[in-house]
Image (cartoon, rainbow, N blue to C red; front, top):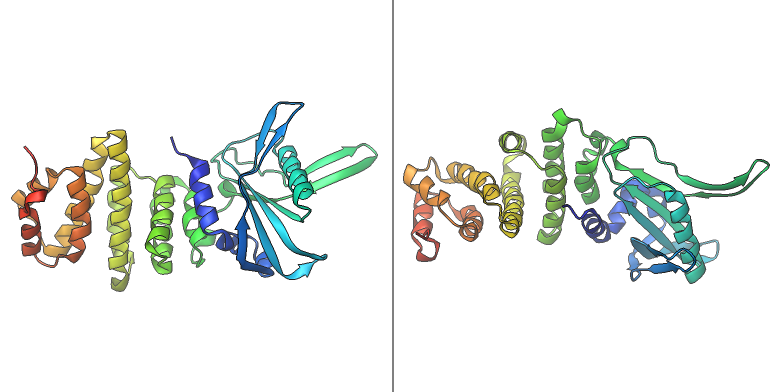
Length: 320
């Protein structure tokens, strides 16, 4: 099971300024993003209903210039991975609690990440009567399944690189969409930890069957310029390593054989030339931890001798 909340929270708290810049540029322009503070997890208990309300992401941000005499405000970001009736009412209750507790303006946002339904989600909650509209609570909506991934190609933003993988992608566009996510990530070149976070997010939501994966691997080598291929290789290897780690935890041997092993053989043939049957057999017999080590080591190989020397190292000799 995919822990959608954890993946999205990790991505968006890591790249919160970039998230605001991507979707709310007018708001972002007036912020001092170096002073963003995430508030501790907030939980409210509804005594009469016995309900427990827990907000997803709450950030305190400073305006560049005070607005309506307020130097700070809160961004309330709710992550919704499933369809829920009366969601606007629940978000309004959160809004009231935070406004009351901190006495600060609250900017409410909801990000819908589910695949279906496709209908547009409402952006307001209304309290009214036939002759009187008492309240219209409005909030910002980002509905990923109604955003087209092609509209975000070329946006130099790490959040775009990741979230394109969850947008509206036709089945026949899956390979091209992942290539564009990948190309943007290679162009941005964030630090290794952030690269791993984004690449893992992309690979989780654009997971390929073996046939698709082969087509993706072949196409990605064609479209990237030579100077970016080394970076590309490192990221692809990282994706496969993550798949191996998950496979080990779940006891899925097939994932190892169809994932990392195949990619390593392909990359080795490009770096050192055609492998001998003996070399291929040795690599196929390697245990998962040795495959991971080889995925790292092959980046430094330039000849077949380098591979032979590595395979001769005793600690990597396959077991009986």
